[in-house]
Amino acid sequence: MCSNDSPSEKDDGTTEVQPLLDSYETHLETLRLLPLPQYRSRELLTATEELRDRLATSGFVPPTQLQHLLCVVAEAIDDVRAAATGEPDRLPEAPRYPVGTPRDEYTMTPDERETVLDGLTNLQFTLVETPTLPDGWRRRLERRPSTAA
Image (cartoon, rainbow, N blue to C red; front, top):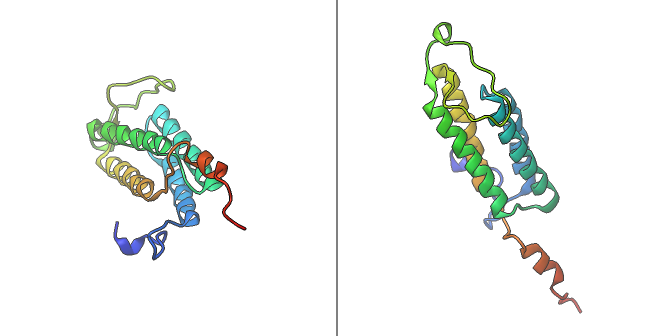
C-alpha cells in the first residue's frame, strides 16, 4: 500500500473516520466472498462488523478490540499459508466443518490462496490506520470538568 493511496490521514496526522468506515464496508464485502472455512469466515465477519460499528459510533476503538481482530486475521493468514494447494480439478471436495470446529488444514487453488492473502493483508492495513483510545479513557474524558467559562 502506497502512502498516496490512503486518503484517511489529515495533514495533522489524525485519521478521518468516514474513509475508514468505507474501507471496512469494502473489507466486509470481500470477506464474504473469500473461500475460507465457515467458522473462520464467520469469526472474521463478526469481529470486523463489531469493530466497524464501534468506530462508527465512537470515532475510535479500544486497543483490545483492535488487537482481537488483528489476532483473528493473523490466525486466518497462518491457516491459508498452511493450506494444501493444487489445481482445481485435482483438489478433493472441501469438507464441511461445523462452526467453531477446529480443523487441521483445508485445500485451495494457488489463485484462491493469493486472493485470500491479499484480502486479509489489506484488512490488516486498514486496522493499522484505525484510531484507538485506551479502554476506560473515554469515561475519564467525559467526567473531566468543563474548562469553558
